[in-house]
Length: 257
Length: 343
Image (cartoon, rainbow over all chains, first blue to last red; front, top):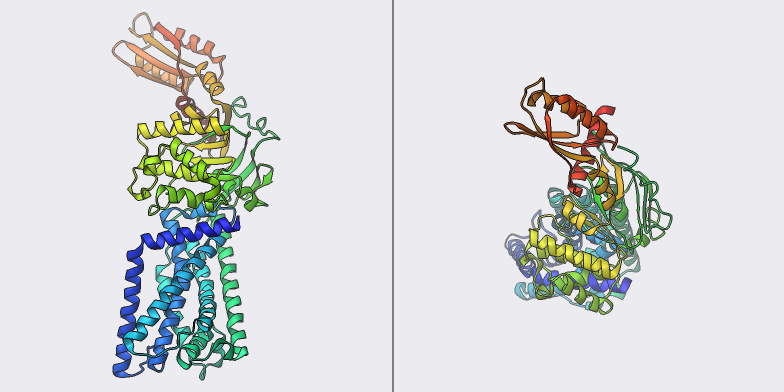
């Protein structure tokens, strides 16, 4: 049963990504253009108040992490909204595995696709901007996955809200800015910020990409914080989603849009 | 509603494949409480195809969604294949599939085949295991030529057939079809009904069809459960129900000339309405055509007496042909009348 559901979810995720190729391509181009504008702006006037890092390297890694986080929660939250809108959400709920697991499986497929996409994007961005970065797959992938899972926690929480309120686009935009906030809070001024979601992920990814540090050379305490925040974020997200699911079933909101 | 129509307590068969007992569900918000399901009980035997009927807002869809685990009921018991749906929803889900009203039920950017494989897959039926059966479904539902067409490019009839194929491909013993022919033209509706009958005959699945289209129910179902205002008001086999109403429905044609102290057309109509609330009449120049549904068979004597007192000549008096639609309308009208009387 598990293997069949996983295989079906992955196949469906892949097919829909291919069918909606224009949507994916336009997303890639938009992200790319935004990055180029930020990069050139920063290069021309120096680090401003609203950027993702103090240096060009910081901006580069900050933007990459921001993209990872955005992908990590957008797919899930928009996924529920889209399924409800297209009328397929209730059908997914009829699976003996329940929507939660199908969501997780589809998300894992999205994660793989996004990792490939990120690798291409990062290489392109480095090429165009002349930034030298270390693309050490063995070190980067686990850190990306952990950061991505933290974003999944946020995604599940937002998906839960989407189950109940359906249209959460306005709130969604606020969250996008909040995520930028989480990524740019400086640790030297706010030491507790390292315990916030995405913050440690960003720091460690920066160490690997900019400083060329390997995964096993990173401080164990920082890895532990990353894992702890990942478990808590994902757990909280799933718990909120379960709560929202119960509320949606009690109020008969699953099929409504 | 008369007891003779509500025999669902007797139909709560202990060996039933689906049992719904004393189901209640109210939707609450800050302003109001809507009691969608007040007390619904019925059961369906394995291999039976029943119709779940009711006017808009009667509680049909809420009942189906409670069984499917999409809506959480306030109280009651639901059992499918001996599994308690409320305590073990995931286990119960293995036995059920559905085509839901108002939903697309399929992905429009996937082809017919891809949809079938996906929805069967998330129910644990792999492509390898179900391939032959999927092909058979395409054959029966006349979808073979559309196999590799994206659903968005299909007509409503084919889209509905695809949704049905996706539900059936899960190979569950119990299938719910909520308004399966909604929006279909006559030909597509006929084809879908024929396919359903063929599948039912060859596979013996338990199927619950909810529809406003009485032809569909009369055509494919053996029994009907009629729901009104959140309660079951009828649970009967369709032939039984129709014969019950046939024996109580009469058509009378009177010639009214107003002479020799006989009543005028208007007077007859007025008296008719007060004596037989479930009646209607149509007047032409000299004749009055009356349709009467009696609450009890014995009321025929009251009708004859009424006709005698009008002083009009009886041209013809005949038992009316009744179909499910007519029976349904009478039942709902009576239920609404009894509600009005109670309140």
